Amino acid sequence: QRLLPMLKKEAKRLNGLVQSILDLARLEREGDVLNRAETDLGELVRGLAEKFKVEFRGGDVSSPRFLVRCDPQLIEQAVSNLIGNAVRHSGSDEIIVTVACDEKMARVVVEDHGVGIPPEHAARIFERFHRVDPARASETGGAGLGLAIVRRIARLHGGDVEFSSVQPHGSRFTLSFLRK
Image (tube, rainbow, N blue to C red; front, side, top):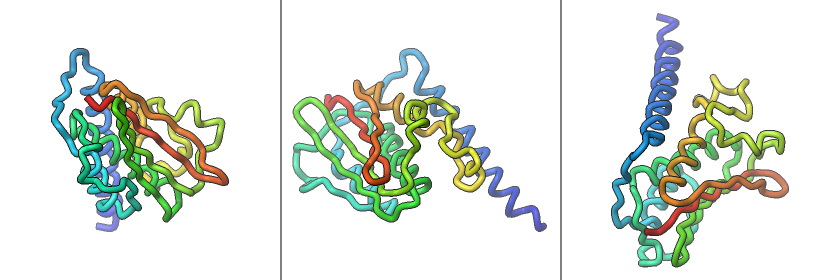
């Protein structure tokens, strides 16, 4: 009986790991087809910001300037991964999500003012199974697959995801992809 809470927690973590591996495998299959649809990126991201209780900056999200043609489920998964990482790993209460579009590209920026990512890890954070702080794995969950999944989703949409440090401390992830 005393082990039941631990078993539930570990089963949930293992299920998450298996799901992440399956997600990445599905995204990497040759010929994987995107289910593109006209999507209001501002509304999608604002809804995620509300769900995670973080600050959203995007201006008037009902504006047509945020309409994109993408696979909304995949873009939602990518943005959720970025916001979830900031919430779980940054140690910051100040997380800001911004949406911007120009004629060609759409961008979602997730910025925190937390502990940041040490420079020696910056080049490897998008690699599968890479964790900045493996000692916290059991505490924060995850397997180091989230950012690899985000990168694959961005590239399937003709874009990428980039990391930069925020001064004096913190992290900024910019997800960009083609609007059409």
